[in-house]
Structures are given as structure tokens and as C-alpha cells.
Length: 191
Image (cartoon, rainbow, N blue to C red; front, side, top):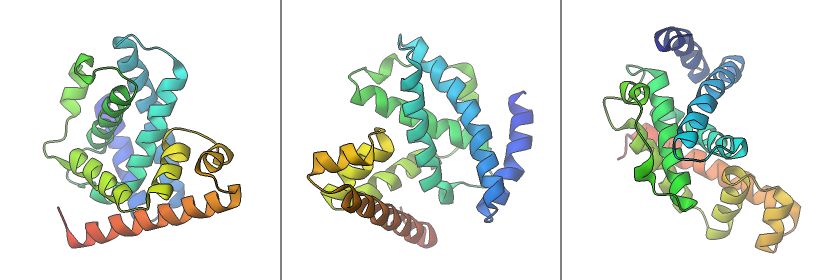
């Protein structure tokens, strides 16, 4: 499927998802996941990293960022460009965290064609960072371990010195607080 065909197919699905259609949202995530998985594997391979689990880790971070920043999507922009921009930022973040200099990451022709004309992706990234920063450190660490690094709740709870049940509650409340924070920012149009 060409990029134009993908955009034509994905855009109405994503707009329906934004309107509250849960089935459309699941379909969007399935379709964009397949696209982004290939993109991330290709980009990781270009910097000499071809472990499939690494691409999956970055994909999960990307999907979480897409979910948390979906209110920032500008319907006038291509949804594929928005999603790819967020995936690239997550990939750069991952490479920095794992000791690989992100400057070695090539910008391929397709990714540059997909770049959004505005700073929506960087705004979404900043919003996500601000939402995480607003959380208590313990909750922030739990969410980071479980939702971004892929640890189990039991592992994160042990590292935090909490029971598994307490960790689940903290993660749930933290994600709710982040959603509320991002929702307020989106309604107010805050920078």
C-alpha cells in the first residue's frame, strides 16, 4: 500500500476514533502499528541495531505517546506524518537512553516527506514530558518502568518497595492524572 493510499485509508478511521469509536481506534492502532514496526526496524538496522525486541520496545513507547497526545492531532495534517514524527522522536529518545548517539540516525526520504509542517510532534512530546513531570516521582518511575520499559508490574513494584496491588493502583491513578493534565492543556490551548 502506497503512502497516499495508507493516508486515505487511515485518516477517516483515526477521525472516527477521535470521535469516540472504540472499534475504529483499535483498527487504527493495528494498522499504524504494522506501518511503524517496519519503519522502526528499518531505522534501527541502519544504525546497526537489528534486535526485533528493541523495535517492539520503541513501538510500544510510540503507541503510548500517540494515545496520550491524540488530542494534539491537527485534522488538517496527514495522520501518517503525525504518527511517524512521534515514532522518530521516540526512536531518538531510545537511542539516547541506550547510549547510541541519535545524530547517527539517518533521515530517510520517506520520513522527510512525512514530516508535519508544524511542530505538533515536538509539542506532543513536550506535553507528555510535562504530564510525566507533574506526577510524584514514585508514580512516574512506575509508569516509566511498566509502560515505557516493558517491565512487569511485579518487577516495578519490587523496585519501588511496594506491593503489586499498590503499584497497579499508583499506575492507574498516574495515567488518569496524565490524561486529565493533557486534556486540560488541550482544552485551554496551552503552550
